Length: 361
Image (cartoon, rainbow, N blue to C red; front, side, top):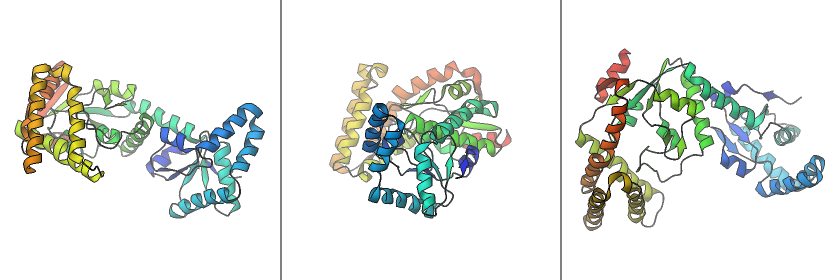
C-alpha cells in the first residue's frame, strides 16, 4: 500500500516541499506555502475530462484521462515529478481531495522506483486544517497591536520582534491608499494559508503574546479572517511616536525612492510615467476624503515634483508632497481612528522605548 500522511502540523513546521498535481487553474486560485504546480492534467485536459465525466460517468472519464496523458506526455510529467523529488526528497504529493489524481501520480512514480507520500484528504483536508488553526489561534495567545501614524516605521519595528506577524508582508501591500505594490497581492486563499503557517509556527515556538500592526479589517484587497480581526480589534494598543520629518523621510523612501526603483526593475520602458500614473489614480481615490481644495493642492505639489525630477533628476521635491499628504490626509484620519480606541492604549513611545517595553513585558 502506498504511503499516506495527514500530519499537517509537521508539514507546516518543517516547511515541507509539496507537489500539487491539480490543474494550473486550480493552483492559481489557491495553494500552499512551498508548493509547486506539476499537474497530472493541464487545464484543457481537465476540461475535456470534466465534460466526459458529466456525460458518460467516472469510468469513461478515467479512460479518457489515460488516453490524453499517455506515451511521451506521461513520461514528461513523471520526469518533472522525479526531478523535483531528487532535489526535494522529503516532498509530499497532493491533488484536490487526495483521490484519483494524486493516487495515479503516486502509482506512476512507484512504477519507476520513486516513492512519495501523498496527503490524505489532499488540498481540501489541509486547507480545512489551516482555517481551523486560524479560528482556534485566539485561544492560545494574547495580542498586542502596534499603532502609529503613517511613516512612523511600524513595519521596521515589527521586523525587530521575534513574536511579530507582518500582515502587510503576507498581503504584499503597505496597508494604505498609496500602498499598492507593483506585484499583485496574493489570492485571499494564499494569504490565509500563509497566515496560518505563521500562526502555527509562532505558537509552536511558545510565544504567549503576538504583535500585529494596526490594519483594521483588510490590507488592500485582502481581508483578515473575521475571527482574528475581531480578536485584534479588542487588543491593547502600543503607539509608535515618530517626529514628522522622520516620518516624511520614511514615507518618501517607501512611496517614491523604492517604488520608482520597483518600476525600473520590473522592466517598464517609461518607469516614471507608469509610477506617476498609478500615484495619480491613487490620489483620485481619496478625493471624497480629502476634499476638492486639498486634492487640488496635493495634485499640484505632485506635478511640480514630477516636473522637477524630469528637469533635474532630483527627487527632493516629492518630500513636500509627502508631508502635505501626511498632515492633510493620513494624520487626521489616523487620529480620528485612534481616538476611538484611546482606552485600549497601554504605552506610547519611540522605537527604542517600545522595544524596551516589550522586553520587560
